[in-house]
Image 1 (cartoon, rainbow, N blue to C red):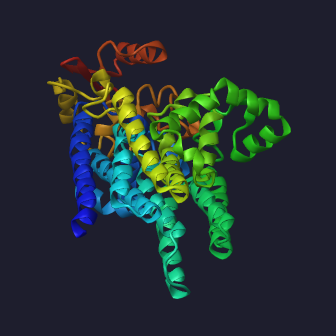
Image 2: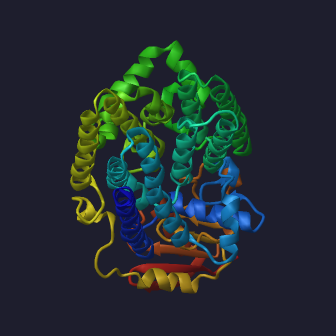
Length: 486
């Protein structure tokens, strides 16, 4: 009997370790092949480095660190910067965090289904979800790191202890600690916590649910609505994405209520039903049997689908972190809903969920057995990086640089690092243009041959023609230019 209980946990543990090993190596190879980018790995690496130096203006994105997002948990990572940590470490930590998301999935499923085998099957389902591997591929994002904390908080908040009084209070404190940690990764995680609180209230957990709802709502208002935009100078990293719906969360809600035709047109134009299908089909649509659970992902789902930018509802980016976690938890609760009516129905639901995740992982997943594995997302074979490495060797460790976006995350641990043609021409710089440093401070340009077009090509040509930059060194197609004139 003991073997029957420990074997499923051992199998899941093995799957977690294998996932970390396989995906971790792929992500490290991707970064080492100079296939990661300024937005967003360069942003986050510079943010961590700046905090370690007591500074906080991020030149990659043009905003203060906490004016970009309220990523307070970054303070825990600052000691790793002092020890030499960089992008590869952050990415491996994120891979581990994603894989460890299978642990709360297993714990919740074991509690609901009273079956270790079914719980392990659902844990493996989490590892197979295509979006989970895409989140690792996209590299470091704070909301992705928040997922295991959020799901553990859900576990402690929604799983009632056998006892009463002190046992309940103890579990509530643990749940609050996990959920607070999740919110400290990024401000909009508080919206998911509000969804969990509403679920608790619906289950007549009035006191704890009400306190949690009030705290999460206050946190979002103070940190997300007031502090972050204030530090950013009343700008927003996302304000430009919503078009006529508005630039702030309140504007979007107000416009959607006052002009519902704009709201429904946006849903229709962005294929809202198709988006929900993409989120739920790898879980055999079982999450829809637990609507109160997937409520925790609803705010982010609408935040994603109401934009004018299709990347916010693409299944391969960090915008899907909370929605995919909500759908996974919904699949557990949906299977439990069926199991309470007839145990075989729960077994069938879990089996179909696992099969659906296998099919999805094969059809559009990034694992070695997935069709996207060799579609250009991961580097395969020998990669030519001599030019990039020569540029890194030539550029001084503290020198101000303006470079191609693929170079930025490898040189982001410095006070001034821009994506060319910044700071001459404002491009992908979220803050006020007045915050750009004087171009005269930029000592190096790092540009791959024949990659510049449009305004960037004109700026480069002018800088070289004027003699301001020269002493060009080209290695394997990567050219570094040194400032020659003050």
